[in-house]
Image (cartoon, rainbow, N blue to C red; front, side, top):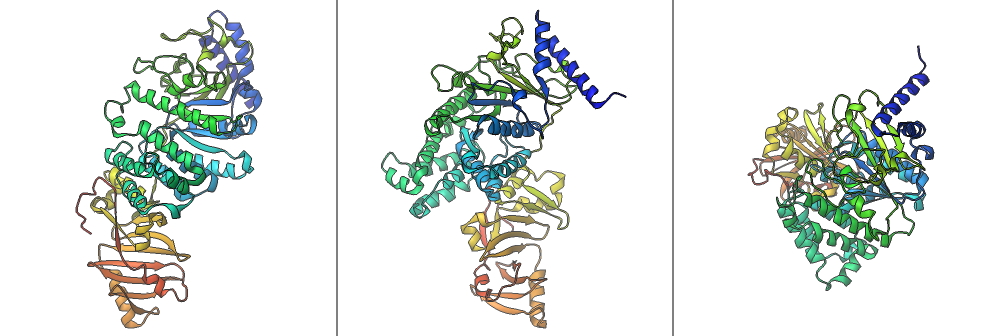
Length: 586
């Protein structure tokens, strides 16, 4: 039986032979020698090394090209980022999303704030980054970043158009350095804008954002005030405003521009991204280096047709490398070629590769540096390019990462099925809203579908109505809805028992029987029954508008009754869903 080493060598030789057949015209021997030296299988856990990556001396901008929502692009991104950070001095990760959304991710990878990560992921629903592996990617980057010295930490920056106005708004609030300077009118408009339906292209949401942003940044007259609010972050806040003016007005998102078949959409985005990069180059250290992982169509450095649409446009990779742009000659494009055995390549933009020559040979990730000294891929006549392409292969990209047998990644999940409660658990209010709008027809939601479809509000205590980020968990069960939050350094559960009054009747029974240390209190002229419930818990139960509510403090504390009573009031937090115009039956 052949050893693993021999089998591995045989596979590599087979790959090289096939590469020779594809790449070579008259120069097969030259190509064969080159690939034997530079085509290297890679292990995501062990990562890349300098020998495998090859030439990097002249590059400042490393531009990976992915196929969105594929499972293998996430470990590839980790591997590339870690290698470039540790070996090439890359400290800036540029993302294919808006600067506001980028602020959320950067905040998380610097602080580990899970509430912000959940918010950021929920805002990705329906976009090209709507994939559950995103969560693991950012959690890994937070852990990795926490081990770096302060001057070596990675920073994430969104450079695309502002896809989601709610993410943009939330990111803007993270820039505020002096919250006491924020006007009440600004706060009111912010609450209005952030609770509107959070569709990326919803005209009402964009209009509300525009109203808010023009209040915040009126023509010059409010600069002093805004500098007091944002402090050192003022310039970033202004850039976000400029982003919205450039590419987030309602007319930009109409059917004329927002289509996958109109090249204007891509052209506008890349025009915007190049201006944001120019702005960054003027702010960051002169030797700053960058890594970006974008959709592959944006990354090529020379004009070529979009295969699906037979159109050409000035791609971001081309813009980075043209004219007098500061990064000209310093851009390294690295497309990821995704192949599934038995199927055609998912990379529609390839100027050369086709899946038929890979499916019998490539069964492990392989990295090829095409731009080494005397590379045959930098010579005329070695590679036959597709119609509409000119020059040599390395005019378009300089490295290749082959990713075989990738699969479609699952969408971001912000809910968890609780079999023990016959309910569904949500990470936030936004996750509940997404479920109500998108998941009710799924068989997995059948037990709770009727109640969810009727919900136009969530009952919460006053403190959560004023500060929704306090809510860290929601459970919807067939007979009750539970909201968890922290207050007064205690953990609380606030429950709406919509299907029956059993909890209220039980509390009355305990009071009459003098069981479990019962007492009767009063909150806003409403009797509240209180007793010890379970181990180290205190329960408060009352009726309000003919509905039963329960407040549970999960740890006993002396002298807490008065503070707890302030939480014994059910307030309606209106949900932002397509069903919000339906009258609630609760």
